[in-house]
Figure 1 (tube, rainbow, N blue to C red):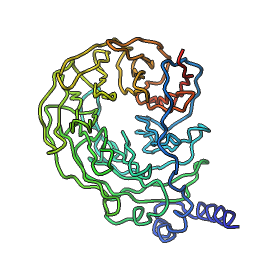
Figure 2 (figure 1 turned 180 degrees about the horizontal axis):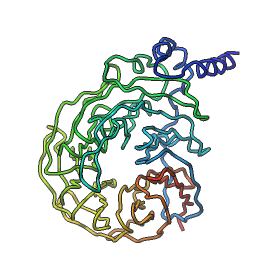
Figure 3 (figure 1 turned 90 degrees about the horizontal axis):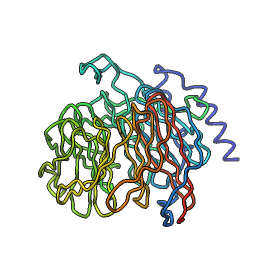
Figure 4 (figure 1 turned 120 degrees about the horizontal axis):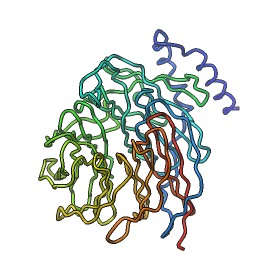
Length: 405
């Protein structure tokens, strides 16, 4: 009976939440609505068995929002979150069914954007999601907003009513929609100011620290996280860099962070014990995205010159490189650190490389129309799926079988 009552409650509230003039009434019923949101996943982080090879099998597609910029799986790889920049929304998608579970739609407010072709500011809206990072047992999704000069935390599960209420006038309003695109809730999230045009978000494994690369501010924001206290994170350091920053990786063994200086030809090294800039590592021009393997080697995509490379950050040496299709953007590495997936924006391809001891081997060049830009990987013991989002609003899922053959 309790389940039936909860379902009736959802239908009742979805009919009564209409627009901004009813937001106050909606907030007053928050406890009842939030109580039916999904509970925190009890799944553990997936650790697939060892494998040496992958074989391409098939593809499927999901319609996302306009201008899908990035995708990220939670740690249990049960749900994927898609950041729809032009759609001003975040989609939550179930990995098994390949269906949209719910969406988080921002209320638009006027802001100043950027025309990357003409390099001029333009009229736009603040609430344009770019990248995201998940912390605290898959319970908090941190999202960078392109034109709002900061990031917001979206609490994904029940039990934190205060995290969804309006506390400050600058808080952002989000309409929560179900799988049929009907609004059944509205929540407020704080905007935590970092810098102009925030892009990539990453963090330490203890969930205590976040880093944000701020494109037009030429700096990195370091934030201390406390999800029990509004606004749930605060900037504790700002690290200047030489030019436009984007991709980042944290090496917790060496206590160093490396930042791709996309506006130049270097990786900035940061000391994680002091949160201060250490030095630049010279690389090729226009590095965009970074990932690393278990030994600390860094893999980088070079957007303008259409290459990927493997870097030894301890020496600064480029160990090996490979050409890619036009404009490689985001890259993702498999769990066994032997396969690299590269989205190539203007090439409309996804290039798949096997990482060998002293080089890359191209094993697939997959068609992916619509300007592919973001990628993340799902794995279980038998298969691997590369979830690739295209800017035109499509998520393409490339499925592979694993083997030791």
